[in-house]
Amino acid sequence: AKKNSSKVEWHCDESIKVLQALEKERSFFDLIILDPPRQGAYQEVQAAAQLFSPCVIYVSCNIETLIRDLVFLTKKARY
Image 1 (cartoon, one colour):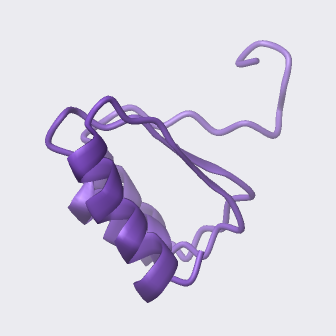
Image 2: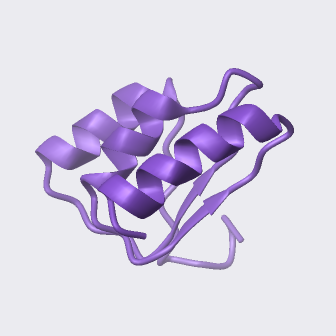
């Protein structure tokens, strides 16, 4: 995808730093993919919600943190 698409943006850094920088730039994305560590991505989910992307894909291996983060996304961020 990286070689074949000019519509894909790749950001490499700590996810919270990237999301906060994108929020300051008032960036917009059609899709955000989060694949957090076992402790979840609560800060990242809050920052991602500020980007108002119409779609968030969240990959999780921990059901407890998945539930916590999805509750925020569905109730607070209205996904």
